[in-house]
Image (tube, rainbow, N blue to C red; front, side):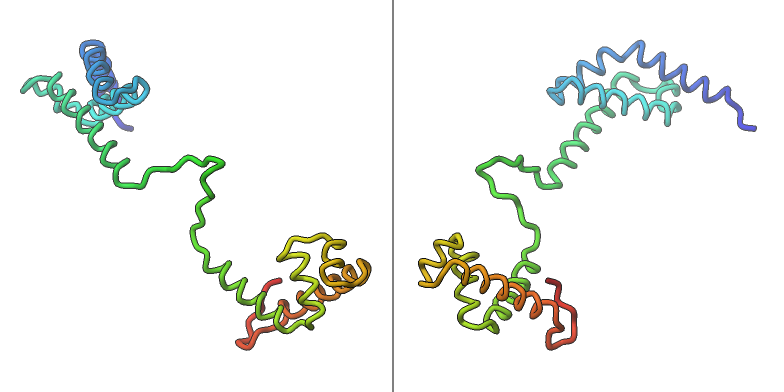
Length: 179
């Protein structure tokens, strides 16, 4: 069974160090970070290092406060370097378009869909072009194509069905292409 006395002694040392140097350490960390919450985190991390290495503080050599302030400064420096090492996060706004990580899948899908569209009849392609690419309603597409709205609706149904069939069949490499 491990001896709990050294642990209790280390905790008492950390408590004593905090009682004696905690305010000065917090003030120093607040000046370095400019943020009270971040400074409290720095003080906590500094005290954890005291707890892990009590021999440094208890050896009687050098200034305890000097060692604590050096450790706090090093922690702040490490955090600044860590933030600088990764790119900053950009807040989203309505003016900023969302970041697209990799558009290769979209390009491949576009090529596949365009190839499948080329296989459709001219009537079916024309209806899909008016409705999906030109953004027209059934009535507007009927007027533009010079055909009844019912015919536009029927052609769009059969054109989408034919397109779906072409997209779900196997391509020349034998791989399944998702619809």
